[in-house]
Each structure stands twice: as C-alpha cells, then as structure tokens.
Length: 462
Image 1 (cartoon, rainbow, N blue to C red):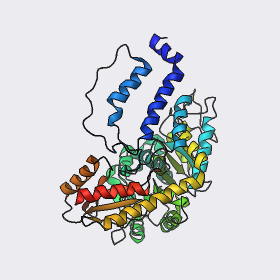
Image 2 (image 1 turned 90 degrees about the horizontal axis):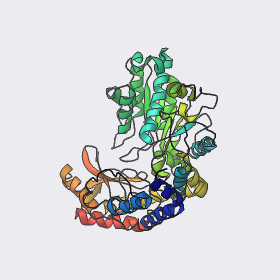
Image 3 (image 1 turned 45 degrees about the horizontal axis):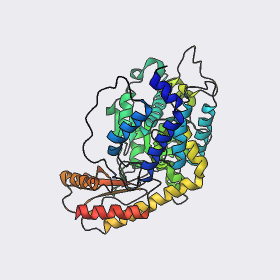
Image 4 (image 1 turned 90 degrees about the vertical axis):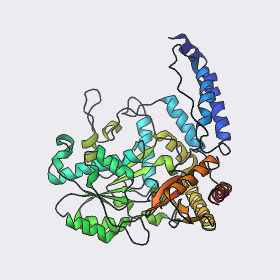
C-alpha cells in the first residue's frame, strides 16, 4: 500500500474528526456567511504527483475552495427551488459514504430493502396507493425522464411495437401534451428520441394562470384520437406554483386513454398540509409521478424519486440482462428500474430525516415555508419599487420592478441582491415580463430571514 494512503488509514479517526470540525464550523456559520460566492475562483492548480495526504487535502480545500462555496444550504438562498439538509439527513449522508453500498442489487446487503421501505414511506406521504412502485434517481430531470420512458413503452404497447427493442423510430411521431411544462420535459424527450418538437403546448386558463385549460386539453386529445398520447400535468409550476386540475385530467383518461405523467417535483409536498392537500387531489390516478427530494424534503443532493403504476413496462425499458447480474424477478432489483447500474444508497438521508422528524416535522417545514412566502409577497406589495407578477399560491414569490421591468434592469436587481451577500434569487419571465422569483423550501428559514431579504430588496429597488 502506498505509504501516504497507509498513513491515512492508520489515522482515519483523526482525519474524519478534522473533516467533522470543518463541517461543524461551516454549518454553524451558515446563516451569516455570504449567500452567494464573492469574487473570482482561484486558478487551476497542477495535478499533484506525490500527494499531501488527507490532512493536506483538507487544508488546501479549506484555504482555496471552501470560501467560494455558496450558502445555498442556508436560510436566505431563495434561488431555484433549493432545500437545505436537515441535521438527520446530513448524518445519513455521511453514513452513506462510510458504508458505501452499491444499490445496483442486493449484493449481500440489506441496503436495497431499506430503500424499498423509504420508497413505501414516501408513497404514503404523497397520498399514492400501493399500485405505485418507485425508485430513487438523481433529481427531477431524471425522474421525468424515467416516467416518460415508461410512457414511451406504453405507447409502443398500444401500437404493437416493442420500443425497448425496436427503438423510438418504430413508434412514429408521439405527441406530448402539456400546459406549462418544465424545461426538463423537453430535455427528457430529446434524450428518449421523441424529439423536442413533439412537445405540444396546450392553452392555459385565463387570468395569468399557468394551469392547463382542461377543455383545451380535451380538444387536443380529440384531435389525436386513435394515436397514443402522453400528457404531462403539473403539480406546482416553477414560476407561480400553479396546479393543473389533476382530477379533471384523470377523468379524461377514461375517454381518451392517454399516459398521464405528473411532474410534482416539489408540489407533491402540498399533500403534507391539510390546508393545501386538495391541490394534489387526483395524483394517485397518474401513471407516473416525479418528486424531487433535495427540494422540500431537505435532503442533500442528489435525491429524487419516481413512481409508476406500470413496473412491468419499467423493467422492459431498463432491465440489464447479464449472467453476473441476473434477470428481473417478481421484486426487481433497482438496476432493472432506472438508467443507472451502480449508484450510492440515496435513500439513507431521506430515511434518516423521515425517522427523525416524521410526517409532522416535515409538515411544519412545508407550512412554515408557505407562510414565509406569503409574508415576503405582502412585503413586496408594500414596496413602491416592486410589484408581484402573480399571487403567492404556495412557496414561490414571483415579482418584478414596478416601473420599466426591462431584462437589463431586472438582471441588475438580481445582481445587486446577490452582491449584498444577504440573499439570492433567480431570474425568470412570466407573461412576457422579466422578473425574479424567490422560492422558500429551506428548513432553516425564519421570519427574521424574510425581513432581511425584504430590506435588501427595498434597498436594491429603491
């Protein structure tokens, strides 16, 4: 064994303690560190030859790179839809690395059963029935990709084509209908050989809504009668957290027989709150569902889950036939369910957080996030330099400058907010108007943080 590697092995407890100490310092100061990284990144160093050992690597990281990492796990990072990592989830993530289990299959480990238990808990949390099975993937993009891949196989089944063998070209054109699809839907269609141009946008409800007009959707389905169609419904759009009427869309399935995929990346968490659970009524009728866990569940990147009613078709798409891996059984191993073979035990941080805080603890995070978003929205309405672009429906505040909201001026506002070190928001466009969006999903965020964000916005827009 290389002597530096052997030395690290002999001092492993001390090395892990040093890494823990650095992590504790960073996490303890997270609320007060700059939310966005200041200045330029250092230049690239040459690849080490001899190596400096674990302690040396830790010291170099702390000096060169750690100061430039964003405070995205902190309470005032309101960009994208970014959760943090609960204390229990961090512990679970550290143990994920320590145990280093490969979730391709059982492999002499109980890890696969722990993931199955976690998936079952999440299925219950989101109000899905036992007909839905699931697996962990990296994020919403991959979850949407898996769901549409199963839908593609379903379309082949309707046409008498084995897509997994013959390829997507054997299907012919396959339309995907959606009102306000997330950008990952078109990306998934590109990867799956369906083509971005087969995404057909359906008219939305009037009055500045992002929810699909169900009557317009029915008309689009009627035009395509006799051909299989995939429908992507939204349970929480990115800009304004609008929800399609899932029950009404599911009712159309009885007449038109389409594949219903629901992108519920963070909107599925509305099911945790009695005040908002009606927004996801009908989710259980979906043929496939996407939920992203490193958003509102507040587990570390990367973690999402996908659900489907047609695990048989999922296995047809993703099975990996090899003598040393074996064939899918009644309870398929995870390598037969998603694009990856080898992967880490992504379920463990989620398992830790669910065990530690339960349904009630995660419900509190959801309801507090919604209350804080509404508080920020009310504060923005009171500022003369800003205006809301849409009502605050759940946990995202979409807003812009009250006067001359040009792309350049809105971008300058975003830069000013980031430069303050106090907050971070991301640009968007809603109704053709450039704007900004602040998404609340971090378990640490408090009313005091919201007031700090409002002060920054007031100063930057004044």
